[in-house]
Image 1 (cartoon, rainbow, N blue to C red):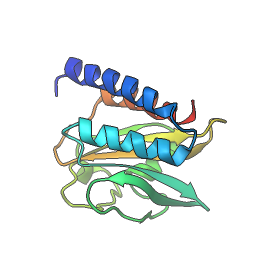
Image 2 (image 1 turned 60 degrees about the vertical axis):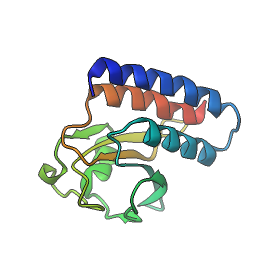
Image 3 (image 1 turned 60 degrees about the horizontal axis):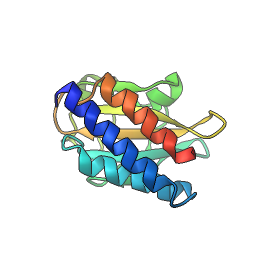
Length: 153
């Protein structure tokens, strides 16, 4: 998708999600809403969800798409890399990422954004996969960070 078109779609989704967030203060409901909007508005999203840290484990939470890995092996794959490096990671070709965890072999590219609580502590990640190579870029990263910040407004 062209960068300007993509950015415009994210801006519209942000406004839609922001309006929906004021309807509840429940974080799980907010995460579910964000996942639903993102997954159904971006045609190159194949799998969209959150993995949350629980007792040192990274466990699947709200998601849409094919069945997910329930727990991601510690310090392996893109999600753990984002947590350990404390930054977003964009992967153009998942098969070239060292230690990639293939929950679904149709996944070709991925973006992972650390999810922080109100105090700034990483509590998990937003993980989005595409079944096409090179689907994600800095436009996705910038807007997804803003969108998941709406969980804690």
